[in-house]
Image (cartoon, rainbow, N blue to C red; front, top):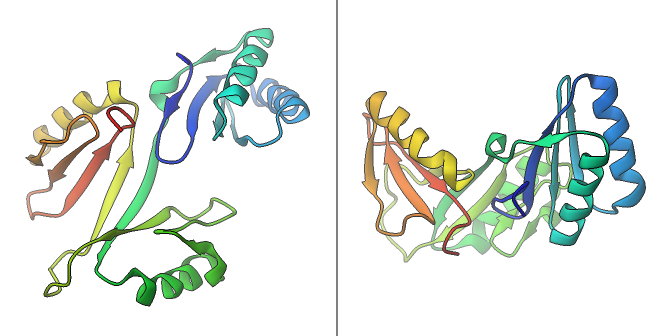
Length: 188
């Protein structure tokens, strides 16, 4: 699946288009034959996400018919992680605040069904004194993009603070110690 990259929950890609009208025509063709994709239309691109690899392959075939080329290195997905020893106590609150419904809290996640709010996932920890930073960002990227992001972050004053589980994730910190995980599907 060279056109696609697996990020947190789904396969993602971006197809370049020559115009908004061409993108809309492609999006309409995708919607006519594929039941579940998420589409985001921009002036010169269509971003597509699907949980089903077979659907991804059908979409790539449609893109070829429309003369479109994929740029999977252009995709990213941001998740917010919250460290907690008791997700049951706080999950419903965050679901209600972020989505308006406690029904959006399932498993270890709060997922907005409209996909307008970043996913919030709860990272289990043992009970402990509340640390200074309990939230952290997880930025899901194609694996081939991560080295350049790390290089740019270091050049901007950051540092790598954990890379023992690379390429699954690498933890970076800003000059004040605030952390972000660069995540890939590699090795998972």
